[in-house]
Length: 258
Image (cartoon, rainbow, N blue to C red; front, side, top):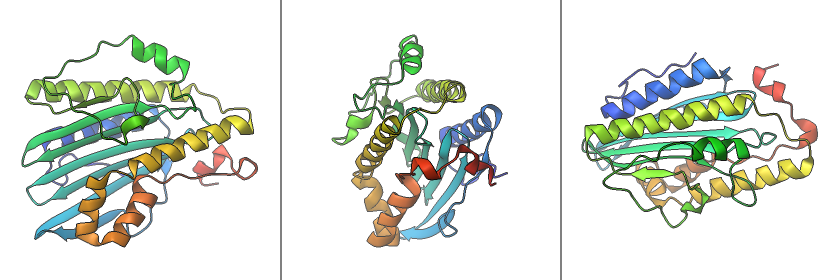
């Protein structure tokens, strides 16, 4: 199995800790199966403004999730990135878990976590809403404003710039809590029963991906290192790929490699 090794890229300690925690929770709470990552995108090296750029992708799938994706990226000594998204299969009415950390020159400049709804009325499933409503909201000195395309995020989205070790730990704790809740609730979720319900989930996931693809910061970094065409492919196939699987052709047993 594809393990994430702590600090394998020599990244910021918070990124290393979170990468290890995510992997541990996935392995303990979900049944993981291999995911077919494009051969040239699993591990990528390039150069950005004279600095070495390294990207490592770790992907799995489960019965409920078509893709669990953890990306670790590093640009020289200047930039460390963790990016994680869990894409549910389109027959499961589940939100999209996402978490990102960006560290610049050793300081965390952005940290975000959310369980993003994909329903037409932009609401979370009842079980998620009830569970998250009961949580205490952590307070941070420097909350950050969501980008213009950030209407995909829920009311529970946490987007901050942690300014102390204590705040870093509080953010880490919040991500682990969201992820654990998500794994537990997803394991209890049954597939939807109608084509209409699945079509709505497909549309919601597509909207999520299209909005995320508007993140010009990500596109700009990738384009400068690898060219615009490669950056576009990476955004659409590795980071935010939305798929529409015909109901008649898909089966939740596919992930078992049968």
